[in-house]
Length: 151
Image (cartoon, rainbow, N blue to C red; front, side, top):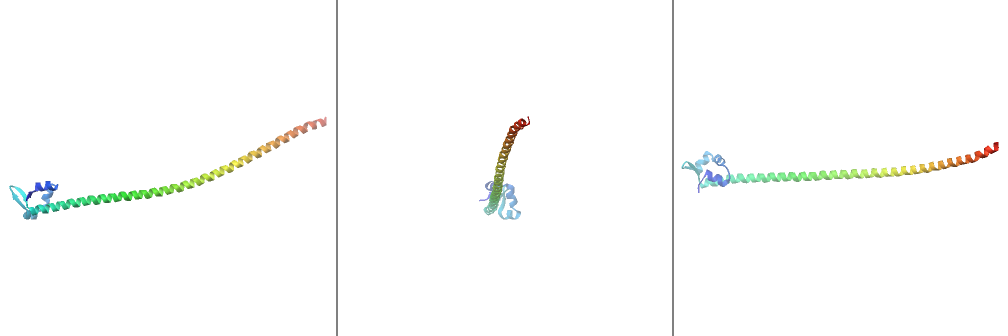
């Protein structure tokens, strides 16, 4: 059953201009007749036009699928790269944390040693003050006796 360009464009979902451009003068001679100032396309021409635009549509869909696959692959690669980056970052942070823990341990030991030294210094100062106090007391006791002897 022959069809007009308009009928074919509606059926295939393409513009009349696209079909007109596809119908070169050679194809028009083979597949089209002018009836009542309208171009009527033969069944063979309709089949060829359908195949062309369906193939073009299929190619477009395949390209869209390829593009989506490419984008999906990019996203997966990005996520894998991001995952690798996060693992490297996590490893680096763990190493830094371990080093900081060692530094804290060394600082705590140093503080403990300083506290021991301060305690020892305080004990020595206390002992020295006690000795000074004893000596002063001995001097006070011996002074009055010396003064009695002189009189």
